[in-house]
Length: 413
Image (cartoon, rainbow, N blue to C red; front, side):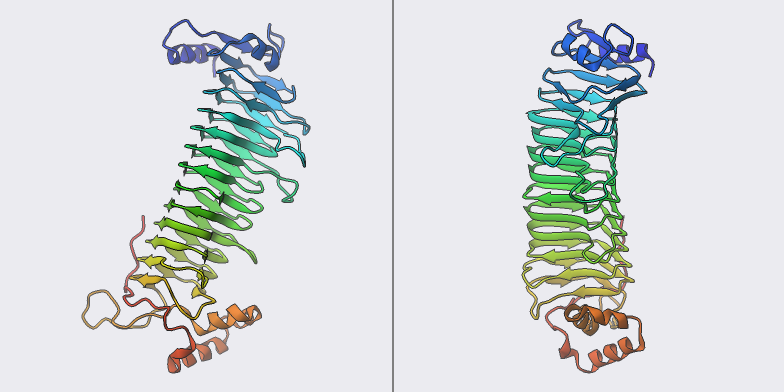
């Protein structure tokens, strides 16, 4: 980006008021280090970081600034330290390249750490080999967008999260690429926040991990090939729409795990190629509607401590098992879903089956109690189980049924 263009942009941002200064940092200039530039600028100024490698340890910004990096501006932690700590309101950081953050068992060393402040904007940055990429601690009304955050996580104990948010509210996370961390995005005690259009892939644990975070939402995100998928735990009023949960395989891997979650919605999402598409434990007053489940081991696993959940207008197609449960009774509602294994009839031609569908199969019940029975999957013995189920339907829990199964898949966006 040419220097003249950057300066012109900054002047326009400030309305040509003349109240702000632009200080340029570059090797060999009057301000050869970022630390020297920070000592020179005042609140409201712009710090323009020119091309070069800056290995200055952890820098603390305690003034309201705009910090703009030109192509080739690299902050290098040399695998020893964090890089940038923001402690003033309304700091804008854009266009910088951060790399080689140090590791620590005592501190959450980060490429960018925002703490005890408000209204930070972090955009168009690249982070490589970060411990924690971006860390917001008690930092509200912040925006994190268009960043590229690449980790090198190998063990859970030796890695951090891509975007970590703690005790904050009104945070907006949009259009970031986050790859190879412990968790891609981590929320703890975060409220009134939104996560849009991010790609979160190849993490050791979860693509996104919510804990004790209420009145939040995530939309149009892609969570793919993560060790344990996605988890939302101990939260309420969470809105989850238009997300893609795919290719999460393993003994404890889910497209989406919902644990102790209530008064939330799961609408127009895609679950494809997971060990378990959706896992519900201790959920209540959840609406799961118009979701697409395909080519999962288990499309839906719902435990006996779930109640008042509504599963309607979803499509279940080409899954090994549609529904599995450990319960004999059902305190939830299944209505108007499409099940490709349904073999009922529709005499009145209204598109709704005339007999209920029981999605919990006999073999899924056996596999739930004895997982090693999965070796028989796709064998001729499975056909025998299915015939026994038709002859003696009381073997499977009758309460788990969709009284109005539809005969055609729901149209999904």
